[in-house]
Length: 479
Ligand SMILES: Cc1ncc(COP(=O)(O)O)c(C=O)c1O
Image (cartoon, rainbow, N blue to C red; front, side, top):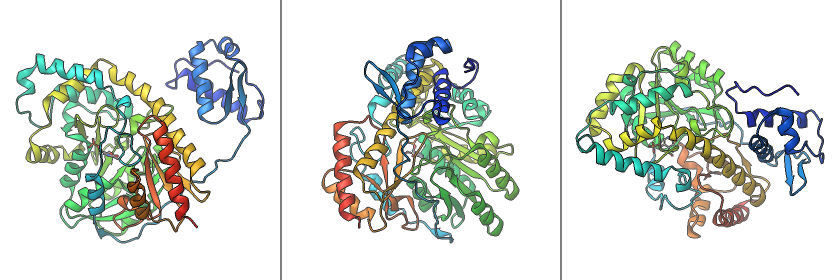
């Protein structure tokens, strides 16, 4: 086999895993065969033992090989995925007022976010750099007390905006610090962005299912939602969206581009480019929420739609809630041509985001700590997702279908038609298990036989027990 490419952006261990996977795919190594030993691979490819071991771990996670103690790695018998994924959604074709009361009610009853939960899309403390951030918070409070205890003003801390601008390249967009508005989390960025481009009564096209907090925003701004068919792997259906844009006034499009919530779908670059072309043709702004893009399991981080935006029509929104800490409440918007409107709204709504978290995060980003942390947690999220998929396959009835996200930490599960997710939610809550029922993600009470499971915590006996119980509750309700 030709040598690995040390200059490639893809890590050596992934290149090696891909090579070996290729040999398994083409039948060079068949079911039951032993792949070359770790030492042999090290010598053959001139890489470290750790790189080889990491590559083998990836192959194990992909279900291609199985490690046998003292003996090596053996090719697993092929088994087709046990469960198929849900079909692309078919939402109702009419724009409607949004009733987000269910989303609000369940969001308020989020429970203790520190405890492992299958419900809220939160992550365990093990997946956050809590100690490092605490140290930096203490440091900025001690050394910059005047700044930390004063009013700030939009667009927010220049040092943080500079760090964010430098990292924009990872997501493929090149912006200056002055193009960024710091917000209190991505949720605020989405709220301000949507408010900046709409007025009450307007229609916003959204993916379906949609992140429930987006529905809360649309409801509170008295906007109508038009749900667009979406695929659980590739996201919004652009043919459907193109038809809608051509046929009626749409004030804005809003979606989660990478590892969406609840489906985990991720748009391809080609789709992102085509979407920007559609927006340009119809002069329609897009509110892009990209809080999960950094949490890709393998390979480079997927690009933002903003990366393809030449005319400032994309209002990009993200935060450090999923990667570093939701409690610090630091997010940002890159509002493009709507910069002034978003800055003004930020000032009106809450003046500014707290200064100490902004400075602490800027220091963490500049130290390289963020990159190291994200590299570490990507693997944890990958393993947690694999364990959750495995548990659904073991405990849920055969009729269950599920997505296979390649990043983020939510799994979208379709149950048999006769299972009512709200009834399941109540039954699960009675035994101390929280889930997110499908109707939360729909303005039209859809997805009644769907649930979303959170995979943000390391796998534990409690999660295993909860999944076994949940599987029984689902089976009791399935025909
Ligand atoms: C898609 C999406 N956007 C935004 C948020 C919230 O982000 P923040 O806590 O930064 O407001 C979440 C949290 O679950 C989310 O899933």
